[in-house]
Image (cartoon, rainbow over all chains, first blue to last red; front, side):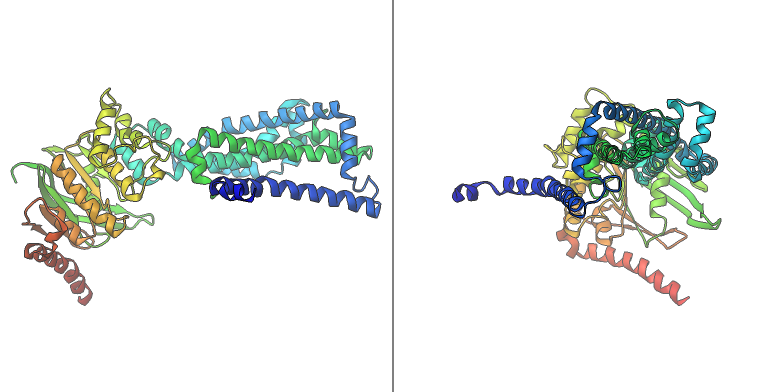
Length: 271
Length: 261
């Protein structure tokens, strides 16, 4: 048996070792952390309204599984719509920012202004203006998520080596084909860096919006369950929220790897 | 030089810097380059070598004087020129073949035989078989060879090279110098080649144009009287040594003189 192990090509063993390091170790660490949490709560007899045990969180959340699923879908809807709005608005905005110093100078103050307003303070005002529906939630999610995306896309568009721009000019390329054939593709790694930040912020934005105005969603669930001291359910919602954040982030990573392999190969050092 | 391919007449160029100051990059440069001639530009850093190149490329306009190609004044980039920069600056998302075809795509000049043309060029620089590779999979020298193919793909009459081998290691640099001579012997072009390296300037050129420090002006034009095909063995020959010594004196002599002044 030992001989067979030795004969295994070193490459696959190394792959196994990397897989263990990348997936095995984090999983094990998470399981241990939850184990310690459970044991500590039992050992010191911590009341569940202060810090519920993981097992309690699990059973209480599963008990109202259907409701939790409904709330999760509501939050996901807000996250997606807000994220989509961020992309649709950030890309042209970043292009506008980089086309001329004059547009940059006129748009930047507004951008910084929207960022300096506390979104939690803005949320109730938006509800008054836009009504108690999905729209103010999407707008808040967008306002929280779009800024880093605009900045990273603009940075990407500006980071094209001047020689490539000169090459484009030497080929007498129009501004449009310079943008589409040189600047935008060049910015792809930056765009994805921005998307990764934006998707995580979109989850935060959606919850902020739900705290202020919602009749469903995980943020709403946390508020109502804490009001009735159903702390395990609130923790359950919290864990689902963090899972949503992680899964959506990874989804962006996977999309980048599949559709822009050269981009992720270049940017692995950054993110 | 009746058959002037490129003609610069009393070309001056002044740049305005960010703080509003004026920088005189070139002063009264007149130069005629014949068809299929290989001319190298040497001079200290910041003497305006690249500015001359970009004026011929049509990327920069002269502040005064005229630059023309075959008698017509250069007012914008022209299809007769191909340009190679110090960095290969290949598109990281495109394959080697698509990188070579890139100028044709930008100029909307793709034709059914374009790909075949690109393949032939890649074969010329010993890169047959790498058409489908990504630029990052190639070494620096190989990437620069792709950049040379990219500059040649639209079959320009003039090849402008801005320190194309400056970023390469010394051994690759010598190899690429010979490679370029071989390509030039197979595809005759008018070449304007900017370099910092005196041996490179001498070995490549029919004529070496030595520029003085800023504001750049022509210190002297030196004819290189070496038989072709050239090789690094000729570095020991008296003609090579003589030309190299003259260039060195022009560049460093001036520097010492200006320091003494």
